[in-house]
View (cartoon, rainbow, N blue to C red):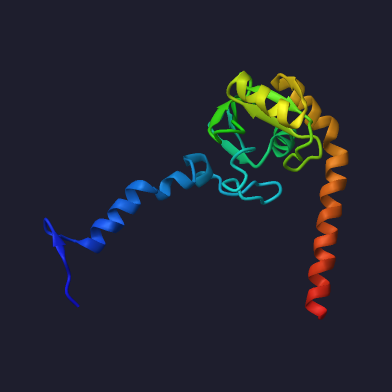
Length: 178
C-alpha cells in the first residue's frame, strides 16, 4: 500500500488531525461532569442531562454534582450543617453552568422536568426564558421560588420515580423469564 505524504505527514494523519480539530472530544463534557459523572442520588448521567445539572460548592471546599434541581434539593436538605458558598445550574439552552441566584427560572410548562413532573429550568438570560415560555408555557420565577417548588413537589415526584422504577423492574423480570 502506497502512502501519500504532505509535508512529512500522511494524508490519513492529516484527516484525523482535522477531524479532532473540527470535532473536539473534550467538548462532550465540562470539568464538573468529569469530576461528578453521575448524580449521587439517582445515578443519572450528568453529561446526558447537562441541560438540567447542578453543582453545589460548600464552605469546606467539597462539591456535589447532581442531575437536577430536584436532587440538589435533596443534597441541600441532607447537609443542613454545611453552608453552600456557590450553587450553579445549567443554562437550559447552552448547557453551561451559571449562578443559580442570578438565573432566569421557568417553573412548570408542558415540557417534563428531570426527576420531576413540574419542571424547573434555568436560563442565563431573560430572552431564553421568554422564548422557552412562549413555546412551552410555564411561569417566570427566581431561584428561591424554584427551590420551594422542588420541595413542594418532592413527595409526588418520589412516588412518580418509584412507580417508574417498579415498572422497569417488572419489565426486566419478565424479560428474564422469557
